[in-house]
Image (cartoon, rainbow, N blue to C red; front, top):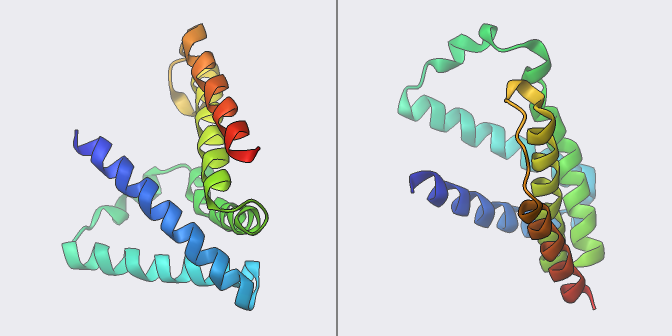
Length: 141
């Protein structure tokens, strides 16, 4: 249950961040908004790690180098989301992002990327994604 609550909080904050980024981007530019967002996020994360006294960052050497650069995707995520918010609005952008995340995750799990065991996906799972796409079409028209 705790994980579900965190996921809901993450989704809510992602939406709020997207709106804030779009407003910032209107005033100073998309890449500049991404820079501010990543910079303030970095500062907030460092402060939280320091406040809770977490020392697990010392285990960073155990993480493969390719995974250490995962945060670099954030620049492209932010750029894409800010641009989409400007062109599509909040509801359509968030809906499309969610469907893209679910679709890519299902494909990754089916293939077994990143060390996970390949999953056999049921037709009902693909039907669920299809229904979500229909939902986006309903939001669009």
